[in-house]
Image (tube, rainbow, N blue to C red; front, side, top):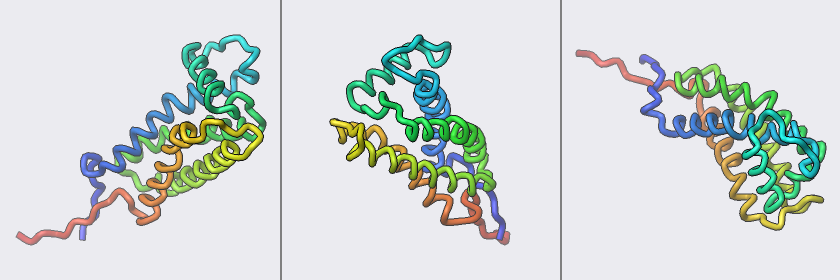
Length: 175
C-alpha cells in the first residue's frame, strides 16, 4: 500500500484551518493582541508606531462597549497575550506551511497549540462570566471567541486520529 500526502484541494477542513491561522497571524496576534502589550493603559496613551491607530481605536471601542477585561488588562490577561505573541505567532507561520504542504511534523505542535489555546480561552471566558471584569454582553463575547474554541477542537480531532494526518492511503492498482 502506498501512502501520499493529499493535496490541499482534497482537504477542505485543512483549508479552513489554514485561513484561520492566516487571520490569527496577520490580524489577531500582531495587531489586535499586540496593541494590548504596547499600550499598558488604554485610558492614557500615545499611539504607537504599530499597530495602526485605526486598529487601536477598534480594540478600545470593542473593549469599552463589550469586553471590560480587555480594557482592564490584568497581569494574567497580558500573560495570555504574551503566549500568543511569542509562541502562537511563530507557530502559525510553520503551521500554514505545513498544512498547505501536508507535512506530518506539525502534528505534535498542533496538538500543543490547540491544548494551550483551549486552556487560555477557557480562563478568559470564565472571567467573562463571573470574574472581576465580567462582561455585560456575554452572548456577543462568546460569539466573538467561538472560533478560538471551535478551531482548536477541530485541530485536536484532526491531529489526534492519526500519526500521519495528511496522508491518504492508496491501494496499488494492478494493470
